[in-house]
Image 1 (cartoon, rainbow, N blue to C red):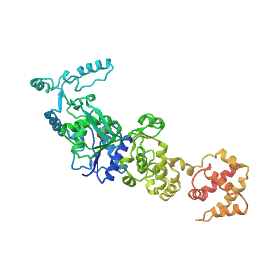
Image 2 (tube, rainbow, N blue to C red):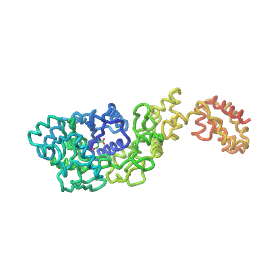
Image 3 (tube, protein in one colour):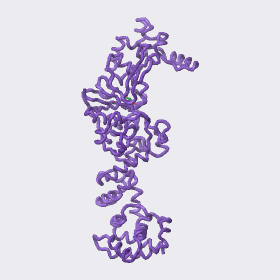
Image 4 (cartoon, rainbow, N blue to C red):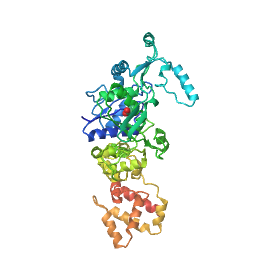
Length: 491
Ligand code: GLU
């Protein structure tokens, strides 16, 4: 049987990185098994629908290189792929369950249920509408045919008729067996009074009709798994395999990562920006390869210490055995350090088209832009670091006092005057590196002093990329001027 997996987000806002990680694991599982990766949009909850969200999800997947094989945009033989366009399918399947007696109509008004809920709460219990009390309510099990007919003219829901006294047992590929006594389960609502299916019902029907072989989703759905099993049973269907992924935790490990954590500590939790005030990883200067690699490590490893995986390597390495049970702590510094590896290796052309690179380099000629990127890329954790890194190319930083103090009593002026002299005499196409090193050697001047004096003149502090490359980038005239300024400053 051909492997088919689906990513099934609800379009209720931007895609959280937890959702993106679910999409990634689905994608990897599909590629690993030479299967199909499907995008299904679960948009039946009209109250939570946010326009623009579906397009956002599609764009985020494409940015990460995880283009769905089937979905609302790409189409496919199992569509429609938006649940809101599948209502007649759900209706047909609901009718089937009603006819077989595994589901029933329930007409109770919200008020009646609220009263029962409050009574239960008073006794310290949670209210359940289920096998133990369903015969006390107004539903198609308790009303006469004519009463039912009349009641169907008004509002009603359809509920699953859970058979009491069963042990419901399902296997999760990551967590093993999940077993629950059916007496503890509600007669879950399958169809709401607006005629829309609930998530649980639509999800089961669609996974079946779309021939999904493995359901891969977040851990928050694990508690619903036994109930989903009962819906499969009601139809007499085999279940697919299930794989529930561990939660992504806050940086301190306490609870689920939320947008608020990102706002508080200044890191993104969405792949792309959502409105102007909420930048995503892309706007914060990540390469998609960097983000994807980091996300793969949130809840999976290949059993070794290896941490750098391209998408193609992940496709080959991914396995269910590598998925962990415990929650995965989000660590922005780690994410940046993975991204740093990708930035260092990327070719200058790729980096140059990134938003921030465009912004901070657009007034340089193209050849110079490429030179700058090549010189600085190994120093970047995000492309946005470029702004600060290259600021001294326009104006040197104020001289760093501590660094100046280090060289001050070692006669830097003598060195600086020599550097100025060499710059003045520098010919077109020549670097002054060799000449300066030779001079230092002949005159027994420590090379450290030479380099520090020169770097402080050009940069203002003692960090930065290769000094002679900086000198070339600045050009002879600017370099000379900066050395002279530093001489003046010291004298
Ligand atoms: N629509 C559900 C969600 O967004 C999907 C859960 C599932 O994959 O079954 O979480």
